[in-house]
Image (tube, rainbow, N blue to C red; front, side, top):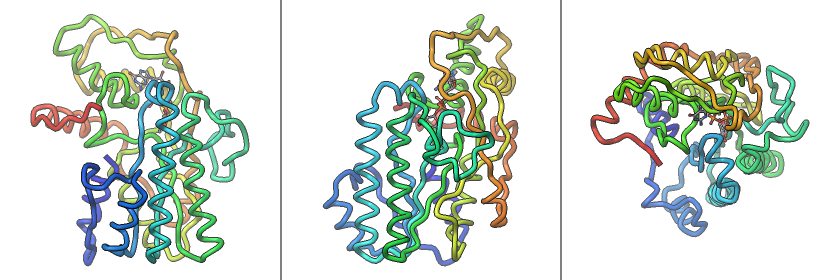
Length: 302
Ligand code: GFB
């Protein structure tokens, strides 16, 4: 989802030659294959959008893969980039790297200030390691390796798997299917009280290109809207966009995860970037994308 959005945004930039490889042609966990690719292609800039990602249930179910796959991908790519002269490396993580009960809104200096959220600790540890490795390469070797930590993302190309997806695509699919089948109610996981912030992936792509143009970017910077919403209110918004009129019930036996993770985006704003897609507009666009992806057979559900 993120990589495709970055390619769409970069295609608007004059003089940019895009080098991409699909997963079945280049396994980023394969150290040698990554080194051969970077040595051959010698990119000037690497934007690292790859990751093993998933929602709260996927993270809780597969901590081994969330830690090992993400660590292997980032170690092979960051090392190969330095070894073969990549001048700028932009590493992408997530705001789940911050402590479960970080002071809200969360500033970049809250990193490692307290215990992580248990439901996504494995992913957070992998992303903290990648962020720190880029910071150390910059400090020790003077290369421009820096990171961006986006809040919860959504948009075209998202994963709509009923169990493994993030909340926003998961609820779009649930409400859509309930509308089609005439189900009397839709059950959302948890209490519905946690607060989440959502950034459209096209906004993230624009922020990434903006960061790649900065001569001296922060080592890491939050990317978000600084506006959050409760899961229950999100569900009501999605039901309205989808056109579902049934009831919404909660299932407190399912995990809530971190109670809130609102990003402080003043550091990024100070560099001259602001987001452009309000949530309601983004939901309308994303439901239209969902319908198109479903009808064309391109809907991702992994
Ligand atoms: O996006 P999500 O799965 O993960 O959101 P996080 C989870 C919140 O939405 C919890 C509630 O409070 C869930 O109880 N929820 C309600 C649902 N219904 C659903 C549903 O149908 N599907 C899902 N998935 N949630 C993720 C991390 O945390 O944040 C990732 O796990 C990543 O690693 C991502 O960092 C940005 O927002 O809690």
